[in-house]
Image (cartoon, rainbow, N blue to C red; front, side):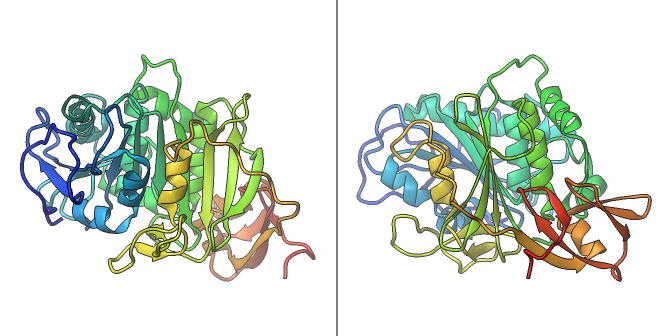
Length: 389
């Protein structure tokens, strides 16, 4: 991955500048994971500002992520620091974070430790406070899962975009299996993978927002379901949503899993009609952001706006759940059993396919048997009835 542009060396002063830019920080700790650190520091950043750690996808860089994902727009608007971690081809030939390598994902080791050191440096050099959040795309989304599990005492919340559950892969071979066709485990097993990352932690656990395109063939949508199962189980919640709604200009389907106090603890955002990438919505509107001139940034909805809101960084504290719409049509898909499994709408056991949630038998796992499935509620699939076109 190409190195991002910027000036070397940390800058401790928070004095206003004519225009914010991406800055290189060359000395932030022992850096056992051999990562680079960049910061986006808005002009006039107040003392005690929150921090968002951003982790790019494969073949990308800190500069590419900063220029296109739209986080910097909301850092300027709401006054928070963005820390961009960057890996290189020396770490991974495709410039992916090594979210599947035990030496890079354990607490206190490798890339995970380097990212943790960036957070500590941000606190000391820029006066950032304890409100720390993390988000990332693809390999960066999978690494977001790693950071939330390994450092639940550091991160208040995270947003996983087209990512993988914590503990899914342990090497290159298993990593590709996690990406596609995905791995189906029980919520309890996924939750244990989180707890095993830091056995001494007893809570609280980070809040998690999950984003996934429903046509993602690189990291299949099943991963959004497994991430939901993982983090709802960690929080002691069920896997059926407490609220559902649609958001944004493209009708993104949101499912919310609430704490006893009514706060949104886990959210799943299923973005219709997009493949693998970060959802953006270029423009100058209040809910718009990002750019689409680079691969894996897709014009659909400004995910960074909603992620900023989920983190509570848009002027509020804990965001209030939206009111459910009076009616919301069920989502329906017609596809082969093979495609239903790849998309996470069904599972396969012994060559047979079963609808996820209802466990209805769909027949053989192949490309010839075709069914229409209806999703109602979110994550629960049944054979379609007359409500589907």
